[in-house]
Length: 224
Length: 246
Image (cartoon, rainbow over all chains, first blue to last red):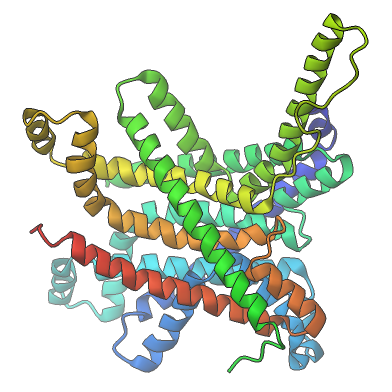
């Protein structure tokens, strides 16, 4: 085994680390923006609101992320309307398709977390807020969201780790993320063991730093 | 409803292959998970630390990387080792018989099949997740039950299979079900190491028909079908196993 290859080609891995980081961070941000309204409205009484959200969550949680990515990256080309519109400029780009697929995917999973914590919200706290004369919006902002955030944190840290791991497939559609870097290095030197092992170690560092950060955050919440 | 341009039969085979890979890796994962959970709860420091290293490393690395590592790296490692073994044995033989000619005692090139690599990798990964599920389930079985089994004169194995296993499965079922649903979706990755599963077939088919969206959507629907069936089967099993409780 010859790990000098990795040392020589470290800039590929650095680039990959950076790509993975911003791709996952942006996907998580957009996913959260989708998940908050979707998770809250999932329990709405009206079927016209509840139905589409249910279908969205069911589809994206029931199918593999790889298929979702291929559906967007390769599938978009099937629609002439899309090809002729200005959107095609973005759908041509692998990074855009990956970001879209990842955001929609993590959005669906996070919406389930949001729905879960809201539906297990202690009824007494909401009733107390009502007794204080708070409006629906005030109750949501002052009581339900802060309480839920604390309870959602462990599940959400798991979701972030799933997203980091799931993002490894971006390397399959020509993006040079950590996996992509390993593929480039392997193609150049035919050293699969060294190339993928280095990628695995990088992902592991990323995963454990997230776990550590969330442990610190959860500890802070326990003091309040 | 779906026009598959004559690819129906191949897709059916692919769908069956996906199911095969998923079920076989599930079996491997359950066995590995049970062993790892028992190792984690054992009193031996070596067993506990081996199991902890296993579950920690696996859960830190993405499944795709592990699959590529085992498929490409593992193949190279096996071939390197068998070559080194041949070299060593040949040298020993030449030492005894100077006119000995090179013989490949082990095959020079072993082809790791993607089918095998896929099942081993997925089973290996989900074994780590199963270990956590089983560990929790084992801990939630009442200790008095095991003591009663000992008092009845049951040995270690009888105690495990008659008393512990049936009761822990009740607690393990929800976690096991979740792991199965994730595992099912992970099988899509075997297409990347060249296995002819649904995703790979969809890729080939869309190359020749220019209808990628149709084919990938079909694959997605088959996965949804599998998930829907699994969810209702799990609900049924959970009801069945909780019958004597309350």
